[in-house]
Image 1 (tube, helix red, strand yellow):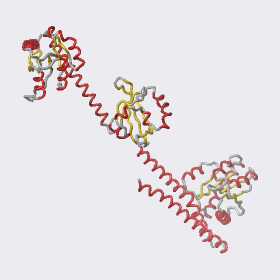
Image 2: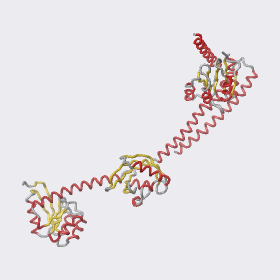
Image 3: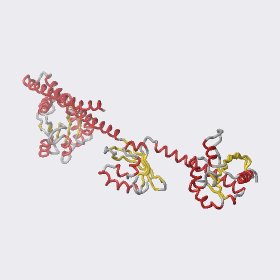
Image 4: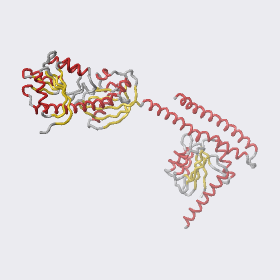
Length: 343
Length: 139
């Protein structure tokens, strides 16, 4: 079998010189380009990781950790090692005597364990490769989870995730905390019913029933109640997701209260404008048309003067009527203008 | 084949004006006046005969029964071949104009003020209509 020619940087934490050389020899059988570093005790390991002597010191592809060191061993050693925060997979080397604890070390964050008496050259090589690859994969997964979590938490639109069975909030972003006034912890102790106005809750059951057919996407406008009791109108968009193994829904809640108020104000203005338009066409023209007809007749030479005098009275009456109607319209118009200034 | 002219308007000044204009234009010297749709409708119902001709000058905005309601009631007994309606309104609202023009009895929508000339041209219009229908009967 040809040697692996990739570059490896391996840190061996081993006080026993014989064991160190053995591991080194095993690895050199399969790897052509290895750079070994030895730490002889825990303090040594800590120094290498925390006070690097060269820029690339402190970065290793893998760490082999003997469970029994002169200054620390067993659980104490692992806890202290975890505290350093080494960003490389760690393989525990242990004797038969410590087998039980070696297995347990996996649950404490160690990547793998090997029994010294059983180590073979190929077994060690395979374990190192396997753990390097697995570590890389887990790292990528963590990064992607972190990226999505950041997208969620820093989104300017209020968002949350809730459990579809219990209705409880599972996660809430900063914008939602700001919008509703509840803290993250308060939210976690609440169900989504608690941000709906009391009178809307009975109707909610229908909405849930409608939604139980697992529609992938939902959108609608709802009334929500803030912690301070203020009612807001929100445009809700939701999607079904699986959150920590639970069937959940992610919700986007955009506050559109201001927009709706604005539309309502405009509609009220339009109503007034329609009223004015109707008056212009139906009411204003009545006395005006009457006046035009009367003037038309008054200018007719064949009509006797007594009759014209009566008509003239009617002209004056119509003119007064028209004056009153115009004042009325001006009044309605003024009801619109101050509103525009206020808004 | 007598021609009856009915003026329907709640404004007494308009009735006075219409009376003068009908006289001057030779349209009709003895028109009948009604202050709302209902009184006009009742008169028409009692006196309606198929052999006579009826011209209604109809205002739209009136109390008791307005012009639209009057037109709807007309459908129950009057024939559009001898009953002609001129809607005479001060409204220049396009929706009113369209609504009136789509009615079978309405010959024309007239927006006030109405002048002598207008009535003369309406009279000619009615005369042409009569000649046509007489030709049809004789032919």
